[in-house]
Length: 209
Ligand code: ADP
Image 1 (cartoon, rainbow, N blue to C red):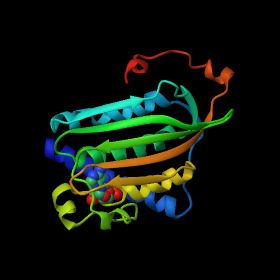
Image 2: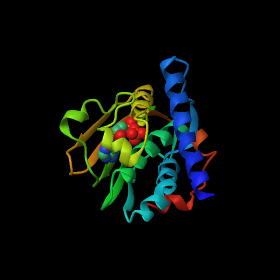
Image 3: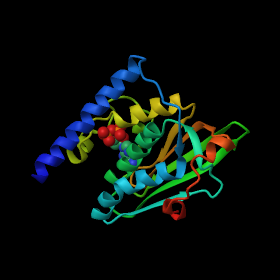
């Protein structure tokens, strides 16, 4: 039963990736603009991967800057998708050590904030000649990666397009055998004070760093 469940989940990921990618390519993809809790979104993504990281004996940590705005306007589901993809890859391609998510403010004015996200790992790293193609669709570091780790090579292409739509940039720093750092920025509108008070409850997640 576990094999059937795992296989259907993997298939679901592939189907969703293909659908998302086609929709973006067709220009039919739009981001939602709704209030969301930034800290909760980041911590939810970490929690989703906790079991997988634990199974591999990896440390999985998040460092969320103290001055992050609580509520923002944007597409929380798509931000979560980018985070899950990067964190998922980090866990997938790391056999020893740790995976870390850092979120901080890059720039802020009265109406919006530019956030800086970094997902770093101590995994297998990426060879220099593969780095420049890593955000292209169906691109994987090499065939042995597909054999060993599976995947479609669509995840980063989707991340790159979503980050583009969030008026940000994505880049990677990596060396073979030396781990990887995926860094992206994204712009979100700030929720003005009156709308903010509609969601005043501090959840226990606020204490998690
Ligand atoms: P997939 O993971 O489905 O193969 P992605 O687009 O997410 O597709 O990743 C493309 C390729 O980039 C991967 O196959 C792998 O070769 C490389 N890659 C992505 N993230 C990492 C990472 N954290 N460490 C090492 N290699 C990575």
